[in-house]
Length: 114
Image (cartoon, rainbow, N blue to C red; front, side):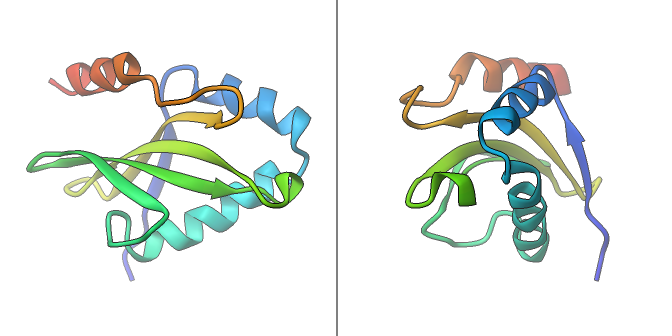
């Protein structure tokens, strides 16, 4: 099995820290998600949606199930780079506080790749 590398981009780390103070199980929930994503980063799932697909990169929006939220989940946006075998975390947010992902941030990320 190939080892996938995980990286943070932009203000993701600050968002994660802020949410982790509110939801104490978030760090272990993220580790559990890493194990699931490592099996098939862009594969079919009712909990993941591909937002952008190109030859080298896939942007995916998925559910991050958090034990602290019980019946709800957070949303997480990540990029999967096929050639580098890397997942780059772009955004994490609580669906109760924010309706949709930050499309401008995703566009900025895609521009930064060029």
